[in-house]
Length: 201
Image (tube, rainbow, N blue to C red; front, side, top):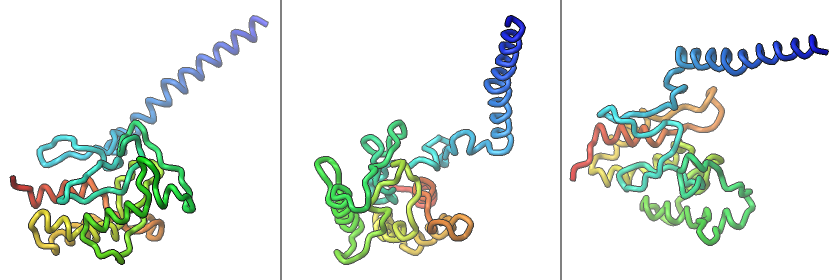
């Protein structure tokens, strides 16, 4: 009995060292060696070298001279400590019409058309009126980005062609060439706008 207990304790200690010390250190070292940017949060810096966010997390841009992310249900909005979606199905009346303290897709579409000076009949991309599963999706569809381009160009007093050029430059192709649709990272696009066309008081 005592011999079996000692064997069990030795095995437990060996496994404890492997799983709690060796394995985490190997994973950490490999991540730092081969994927340092991703392992450290995919942090994004501005032109001055200051950390302004992560390319993996959306921020609540609301100014007219910035591209806006999709709506968020994470806490009071874009809160990384309260990541989560609405869990509302496509037939949900709350999703479509909203409720107290919660804007439905219809209201979000009306707001989107108004802020981007779109005609009432213009179709709004689905990602502009629905919240992502995490509430922190940093990307928007190319269609969403292009509909916001006129507003951004007018607010910054720059030609629309220049904004369109940057959108094309920062558009990511679908994964594996066919998964999802072309998309744009909002934070990176807004940062390059600030760098190339800085705002003046």
